[in-house]
Image (tube, rainbow, N blue to C red):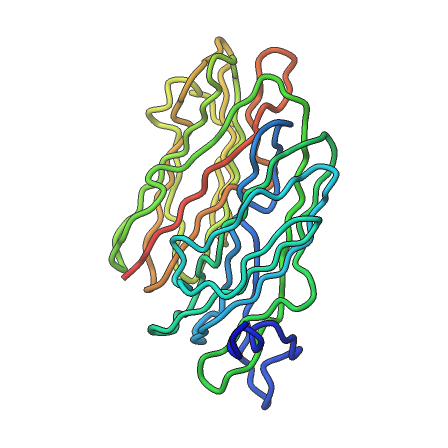
Length: 290
């Protein structure tokens, strides 16, 4: 491995030199249900705020009883240089870097795919040796990591939720209207709880509404602000199947950078039969603000 790769692997335990620069590593999604026999795709992100960084070492551990490592890739990441990419036996090691302009703010590092092989609780955590390298006066500035907690369930009726559009480029000051959809296939559902998180430094919550949602006309919860949105909707008279609009959320783009809107814990899709939560997968959204 190159000297740059070895530098990424060290854990210096702070920015050094009295600097207040810091960065965090986190997973998206960081929660959720997945059925046995399905795949779990986890995106690794780093966020260095206003500090430019040029490399990331992301070391993970995972539950081998519930999860089987398939692959990992830095495709789509600003950190286009791959210095290390290994996985299996309960660990994943990914080192990436960039030789172009060092980025700031939230950035995709890599995506890791697992097979879900058995029921039970599954965790994915960041391991020792993880680091985020500052570009100016190189040092590891990693100060916080957030892993994920997932539940592997037996195969059965299921539903997913997604955001539309899932990507796009917007100028600061303009509105971003995000539609929330659920898709239960042939399974009947009569209610949805959609909880979202968003970066307050990049997005400002404006409003949310279920207007136009013929499947879920009853509003049970509709709140937003401070980095989170909670929307609960239902239908007291009938059930729906297939892809259905849940609600739309309007944000204002605030500042240049990458803004990720994630489904948060507590999101659920209520199956009419048995009244159980059938949500097994979510698709988040990442927007570029210029």
